[in-house]
Structures are given as C-alpha cells and as structure tokens.
Image 1 (spheres, rainbow, N blue to C red):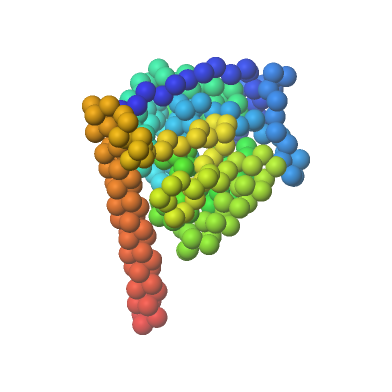
Image 2: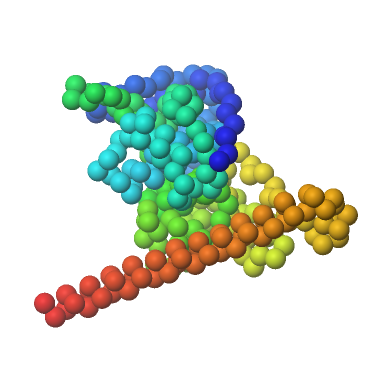
Amino acid sequence: MTDLPTHSFPDPSGDEPHAEAESQSGPSPAQDPVQDTQGALMPEPQLDRVEERVLACLVEKAITTPDYYPLTLNSLTAACRQKSNRNPVVDIDEQTVESALERLQAMGLTRVVTGADQRVAKYRQVFGEVYGLQPPEVAVLCELMLRGPQTLGELRGRASRMHPFEDIGQVEQTIQHLVARSDSLVIQLERQPGRKESRFAHRLAGEPAAPMVAATPTATATASSAAAPRVVPAVEQVERLEKLETRVEEQQTHIEDLQKQLESFRQQFE
C-alpha cells in the first residue's frame, strides 16, 4: 500500500448555506479563486493526494451507494483504503482523512452533516455544484481522481458505473468540455512509447507529473543486474493487469447493454 503525502492550504472561500445543519467556513482573502466562462467563482484547483482520494470517494459513494450516503468518518476511511477501483491502493487512517476533510470543507467542497437523530457526524461533497459540472463530467473526473491518467476506452469502461456512456464518443465529448473550460480541469498527456492511445489526467491537483517510462534494453544492460529484475518486470506486470482489467470492465459494460436491449425487447411483447 502507498502512503499519500499531505500539505496545508490557506483558508479559502466558503459557500451558501444548506438546508441541513452543516458546518461551513466564511470567505477568506487568502484564496485566489478561478472564474469560469459563466462568471462563477470556484476554488483554485490545488488538492493534495489525500484530499483527492477523500473527495473522489465521497463523489463515488454519492452516486453508486446513495442509500448509505452521506458517509461517516469510518465509512469514508474504508472507502479511501478500498482495493477495488483504486490506483494506487493506500493505507490511510481516520485522523488523516479527518484532516483532509477539514481542508476540503475550508475550500467549500465538503459539508459536515449533523442532526438530532444522528449519533455521529456524516460527510457529503458538493463538488459538482461548486465547479458547475454535469453528471458525465463528474463521473469522468471522479474516475481520474480514483485511478489516475486513463485512455478514453478505459474511462468509458470504468466511469460507466457512475454515468451511462453509450460509446467512446460521449466520453470524448465530455473530456473536450472539461479541457475547454477556462480552468481546464483535464489535460491530454503525451502518448507513451508502445501505447496506441493517449491518456487524460485531471488538473485538480495541479499539473500531473511526467509518467515513468520503463527502461529500454540499452538502459537495462547498463544497469546493475540486481536492480533490473525488480523494475522492468514490475512495470510490465502492471501494464498487463491494467489491460486485463480494462477488458473485463468493457465486457461488463457490453453485457449490461445487452441486458437492457433484451429487457426492452421483452417489453414489446408484454
């Protein structure tokens, strides 16, 4: 498992009140907001890796398990440490998650929900509202935050659990909208050697780091014999697993499409 780094932020802007009893922060001049094409003010994208994981988990669970949302701190921590639909898998404790929630709340991206009938506080996100996002855009950004850079095909197979994308064209259109925004929440990465498709990454945590490239045969020959077996096979294994995982998810999406078509066909004879 991977430990995620954290960093501190200045006290950013708050937001409008909510119907439920929620904790919120007021505006602060230390925050430099971004203005979109419609004139709405929103936080400057600046999440650290812990905040990225916490926010993405809240977004994911709000869509995929609405009956168990908002989340308690315990449930949210478990979601952050989840092994499926996560890259990297991380080892994170409740104190770290709670600190990240406080920073996200200061940015106006999360809320603490309390009530007389609740024994513990629960947490929810307002990511889509703050950034003025449509459901397909929320799904794509959430998937990019959970798994990192991905191709259009990978995004269609993985994000379809949060929003139904009929084809890759719909994913591409969504990506184009996110790239064309004044705050440009998504960026296209340079195509890696040996890959046919370009990958896309979100910019909510700043500019994505340059991808690590597997060692070439020449570089491997000059490296120590002890180091090479640990690096190159590991990279190849990860790539094979990612390809297999993507194919399984694409097949699952295809099966779900066929089931919908079959159900529609049955209804014609009822």
